[in-house]
Image (cartoon, rainbow, N blue to C red; front, side, top):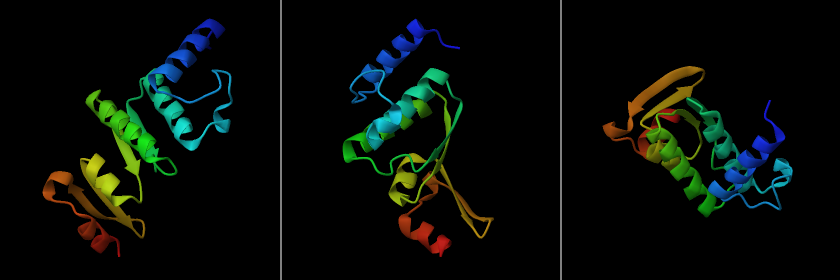
Amino acid sequence: MILPRRRKEISEKAIKNFDIKTQGRNQIVRSLSGGNRQKVNLARWVKDKTKILILDCPTRGVDVGVKSYIYNAMNQAKSDGISMIVISDELPELIGMCDTILVMKNKKLVLSKKRSEGLTEESLIEVML
């Protein structure tokens, strides 16, 4: 259980560090914009010292500025030794952010390839179809 004083500290630090646009620390998260809700999730990862993240379409529905912010946070998480499983239909995002890409089709793994092996959108689409 987090004590009220500590909860206040954590909330205020997250709002400041993650540039969360809010009316105050007591605002309900679901009333925030999509981008700011994503920033709240980023703040939770950091606070919880998560070791593995499963990100399902982490930049869907956010503006370009927030998308860049999320990419930077993902890169920082990677630098901090956090592993990530990213699920996305944005192929440039996957190619740009992931070290290894797996493609599944009809419940079977049909491709496992490292980014360094020359992944392209075209090669991924070919395997998916």
